[in-house]
Structure formats: structure tokens, C-alpha cells
Image (cartoon, rainbow, N blue to C red; front, side, top):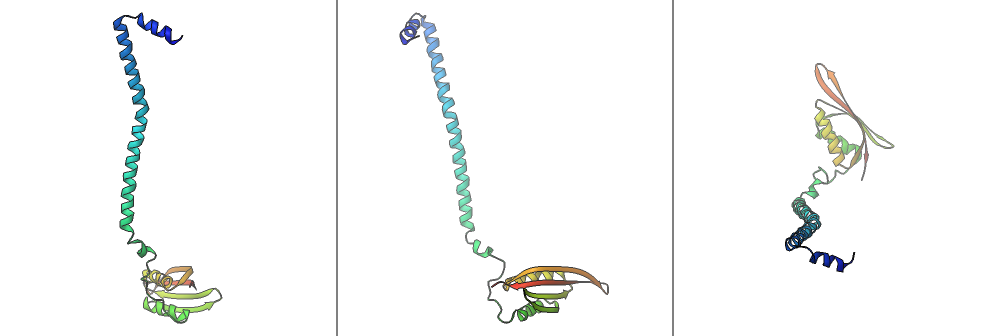
Length: 162
């Protein structure tokens, strides 16, 4: 079938049939255009939403930029204590209001044993030791009942990092 035969067949139709085919063709063309542009419009809407979300995230990150330097660690940023490592640890134990049973220097660092009435103080001691530039290699905290009161003992090995 060539174009001449189609044009001749169209000319042989009645006026209302030609009108019906014209309107039908227009509707088909409209549907094809709509169906081809609809996914593009949906994708555009998604991209606009994503862009606004990313912009909000970027603004939030910009607002949080001042907080980031404070998140490096929870140490106060003060100067490290000077002196022998065992003396520094002894001062930290006293400051934490714990009793130092034993502190010895080993080939790998320092081994210490402390006692106290509060497990939270032992944990604060670990934090303070870390802030002084030591790495806690091992820790063992145990609870004991002494004369009806609960006491805690801790043994740890620490090593100077810097």
C-alpha cells in the first residue's frame, strides 16, 4: 500500500467518516505525546524534590560546621601533664578519688590496679587516662562485697601513645 492508495481511499469516504478518522487520529496523536512526556515530567518532579532535599541537607551541614571541631574527642583540649608516666597516672587516680593498689612499668606500658566505691569513678579514670595521651590496652573491673558495702576493683594496662 502506497500513499496514493491511502489518499484515494480517504477521498472515497463520506464526510462524517473522514471527520471521525481525523478526530481519532488527533486523539491518538495527543495520547502518544502525553505518554511520551509523562515519564519526563515525573522524572523532573523527582529531581526537583531530590534537589530541594539535598539543598536542605547542605544547609543543615553548613549550620553544623561549627560543631565538628568539638566532636574530635571529649577531652577538654588542655595541656598534657608532664612527668614520668607512673606519676601522671598516680595523680589521675588520686584526682578520681580512688585508691591505687599497684602500679608497675612493663615492657609494653604500665600496669595498674585501683579500688574504689563507685564504678563510675573507675570509668572516669579510664577516660582521663585516655585524655592524657595513653591508650588503654586492657581493662578488668570487678565488684566485691566488703563488710556489707559494694566495692569495685579495676586492673588495666595502658600504653603512652604520643
